[in-house]
Image (cartoon, rainbow, N blue to C red; front, side):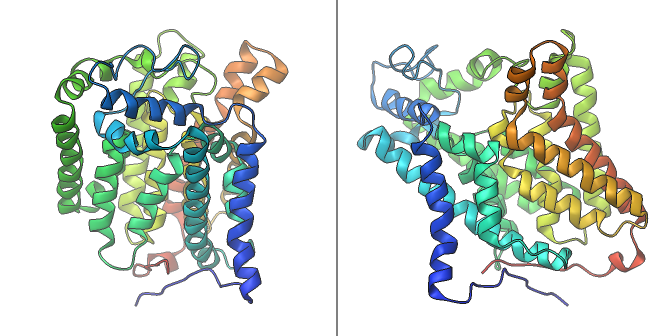
Length: 403
């Protein structure tokens, strides 16, 4: 038997309007009150301009005037093609549109997630709009807004596709393939259908991804060829691996040692192994729980995962709480909640602000380890909970759907 849970609607039209208006207003105010907002969006815009100009070099060391934005374009040509409409309007207009879109999509995710949280945790009383505001004002969401990043757009596309009522796995495959055509890291989410034996989903996602690259090649053959043969192999274009804002496992290791490659590969194996085992053990769970567990993979194994990429945190923490809530051991449940709280606190302020406040050296390295180590510990605790959960949790799958 399947059950559908959605967040209860506010009781009046005014309350419903406020539930949407408050997150949008919070997002717009965040951008308006932050000097220099839109830096990454300016890079997207310059990428679109470069693709339209036969004389321009899309993958030059910097795009646009020095310092404005003065950064390289790091995405496939398909992404640059999608960004060409940004060239039709001034940067402030496109930033305003992206800000509203980000708030709306985050609220759609929060509404669906709130319903699932109420089902998994009966004491959950936080309304969806509060979760949206917290997600937008925590540092991953805040930096996504102020940089003009598309992290929430990509995350919400995959989430809402898998949460859909009809053909969720087909929509998930298309969403992963297209979002990976913009930023490659969503391909790691295919560990989910792989561990569930959904090979058609993998093939469809691969086809969608290859289609995006074919479109990019038809639009700009030379830049597309160069991206795959040389640009992709140059990590310096993305930024320094040991920079404090890189919250991946490799970023954490690079701040402790200059020889991080072998430990990083071991860390990659550990992350993939933990999540793979969890997905197999919890395959009867709500599919969004499985997506939340899988979201840790691209974030942790990527050589560079800036803090603003961690907009997946509400989905990841929901998955952790949903599984650990059934643990037999009360101490294990308390440990999971405690580590989740510490990790969320780090995400709320980010390591670079703590390092700037307390100095460099070991403080820099230690604060930069909180997020990746916290997620690794949470995966371990979640596996422990899965091994000890009550027999009642072995019931048939419970499917959820967003309205």
